[in-house]
Length: 346
Ligand SMILES: Cc1cc2nc3c(=O)[nH]c(=O)nc-3n(C[C@H](O)[C@H](O)[C@H](O)COP(=O)(O)OP(=O)(O)OC[C@H]3O[C@@H](n4cnc5c(N)ncnc54)[C@H](O)[C@@H]3O)c2cc1C
Image (cartoon, rainbow, N blue to C red; front, side, top):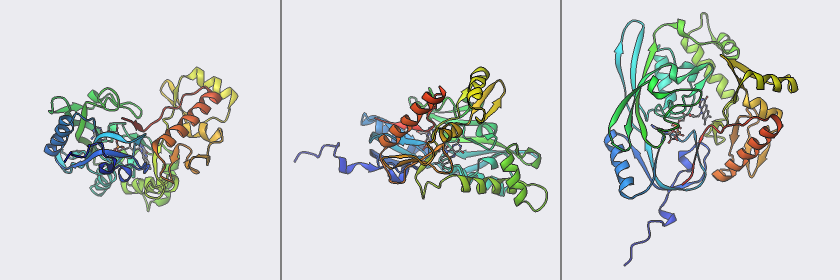
């Protein structure tokens, strides 16, 4: 009897539960890996079948534009160890498949400072350096000493220093030229033991933390303030599927900004050294997109940077809505909005 063709759609695995936009895409094979050996075996298996493969964390920064004709490997590497400690700092090595927010909570419980402003960001520890996650004036690069990554050609694990990673605003080498070549297996952080390192340069955060505190501001107050602000402003993907900010804040030069400001005096922007970071949410909101929807895909009502997918539409509907917004923003302001999550198509 002939074997059924392995392109049989019914045998494909569902990716809906593995991406926070709840896009109902499928892949040829879905393989959770809990150790380096399992990761290497999964990579070898995909290669042996001649199929493409993709390592996914929790799918909170990924849009499957169609079905993925390959293997999806779910990084579930677990573990945390203190590798160095003195009176002022601690170095912690964390496996890439650990949940990011759970790790931040553990740091707060241990009174290790540095990551509290990044509380409640979904995803895994291993994906955090990929786009150098950031929130409330802190980027994860500020605390990363080094990381380890599996090279997909040699199947060797190499160590990279912070500098090797070329971190920038929502960027790193792992999001660019190394995106198909290296898989992060662990990240080593340097965390501080003193409260003098609290970062409170966002007025809304300082204000909320002060309202929550019993006396002098502590690490726990800042953590609770971040959790409270994010819960208020951002939709929980478990209730309303989304991938957080869908667009990056555009970086422009002073001259372009002055020209824009003369036409839109109320435009929201932040000066960063010699450049200006425009608030993409303001551009989208001011262009009248807040609460608009196409084919069931929406701009979120309290945060215009977030595209939501309440009806679990496919990735094409999300991409075409995002392109419509991009074209309108380009027309109105002459500004290109770059999409933040990774669009996957094979
Ligand atoms: C509600 C919400 C709020 C958010 N808020 C923020 C925010 O404030 N700031 C912010 O920066 N981001 C934010 N995000 C985006 C997202 O949470 C982060 O980018 C997060 O780090 C993604 O983790 P993940 O494990 O889900 O990555 P995934 O979506 O699984 O993967 C993202 C990309 O990284 C690759 N990748 C994943 N793991 C690895 C690995 N170990 N090695 C190599 N490549 C890998 C994948 O192939 C994919 O291309 C938010 C998302 C949501 C849904």
